Image (cartoon, rainbow, N blue to C red; front, side, top):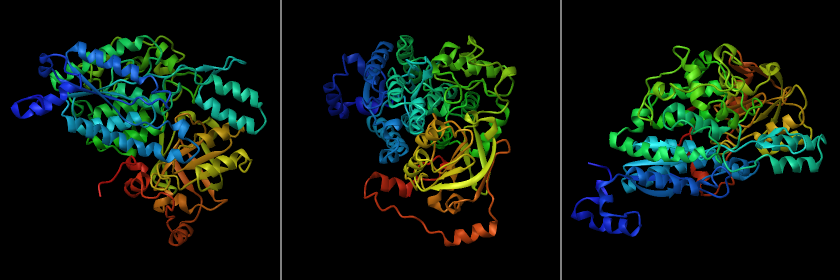
Length: 561
């Protein structure tokens, strides 16, 4: 019995069928015998990665219809991290992930769909949809809207992306560039629709979908404006109808092996540190016991093969030209033990079969194993008396001179105050910037710190100042930036106990983050610490979110109370 038979079979369902006819989706009586496929779209006009998804939705619906399914499209919300950044809107970004997951669950279960195609692209929308789909566990295929093309500086020809604009603001504050030059960068950095062109969070998650086996080859790298994406949309229609016929569900795909494959790709590409937060949350929905300690073990054995902006000069268009995600996975597969090649995917084949014919077309973009940038992965988890439950750093974006670093703490109690303080010169070379009370509960919602880190880079401090926070970073961040410090300040974690001038010690090779303060002194400070109540959240969603959200080391998921 098909799931959709619940709403379309038998005399008792005549009213349901009458309503379904009124939608216009039932085009013939034979449609009652076809699978009902949801198309979960995230089209919103305010996000450049999503502005074209109304067109993508129509193409996916047509592909499902051609493959023998009956498509029904609905939409989720979306928050653009870049536009929401630097003001109170950023509090809603991570929090929106839970709304998206809940909306996916609600729509799929309320309407008894047989399968779903999820069309995300940016920021929290991808993991939100993944969490909801894992929770409902009906046949699912993910297909993103594709990455944006890189921009070009019309004056220098240099490749540009969103991070270039943020860093240009810092350069302008230091009078290194004129307002006119800043304007040229602003107008040129984001030339097309699509998710931002570097290895930022959106592209990181869309690439991980391929390694998880939840998306078809090309999902993460084919540009949004590339006509090849139309062939991908057609293939998705056939894939979802086939998955429904074979009853292949997320629980069949999202195994421990699949999550390890995704993390191996993440380490090889040097993905966004946000992938750790989201992967923990998705694993929880899939019933996997994934821990931060497991991630370091994977990082130890995976070489870093790519350096995509902000860690290097390449962009997603270069990855696609060089062979895409399949070529990276194929390269990794030549070293025994890195990938689980027998993991099932939405292609209906194993991962090994899916990538068997992929090849690297540019070894400067996707390096061979013997010429890897590093023999350790691009992400690392740090522990120590400053982060007993862990902290995350994108090691791929850290200069060699910053791999071990110590300096006096310069403390800011919010992202906004840090951004301003950096731009007006309150931070000098050798300092460690501490931004706290921006964790899941304290922010609430873990504000992204791209503006402060970009301000440091723009002022020439990216290789001489470190930054630690219980908040998080945009995938566009580079430099000695350590986030997700757990426990967070709002929970009384050690980051709340730092005082100005305390020496913070960072040792990325040894995976350590420590505060050079006597333990007895820390205990005394802890005894005097008092929680900082939120006084401005009112009775809306953020107040409920702050009261229910868990720690970053648990994926910042909502707790059942």
